Length: 197
Image (cartoon, rainbow, N blue to C red):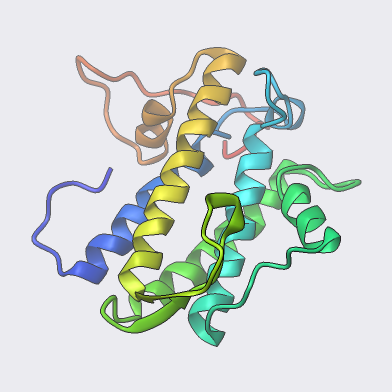
């Protein structure tokens, strides 16, 4: 958890983004490969698929923050890449997805730390949200949107994980951080050989 701190704006934004990324990743703690790709809800979402999609989003963020905003490819290939970011490719493992997530997360957060939230930027059209034209923004709009997006996916991961074995993600985050047991929390012990164990 990102606890109360007297940080500047960019440090706070980095910490809020990272808090959500940590929750997404923690959802995999103690799962088998099969469980990680399971879709126990009515949607096609799995814990590993959400982690994979978050990595896809961070990779896009690295490009945007280093090369400037680009338009989302609204063609068949662009849509297929987006949908594929939630699903396992042939032979792809959850362990490999987590390793990519970890590497991209470090790169993405380093770049976010280096930007000025007050810098001018452009937000490309998002017709799926009813925004049909490019619009001028301050970069903080994009950064706050990252908090929103990753918080949404952290919630998805929490719901999927609870459907698998009843484990809520906040307790998994504390377990990964090594928090001691107290009246409100008992550390989760992952079985050997499972993800993140």
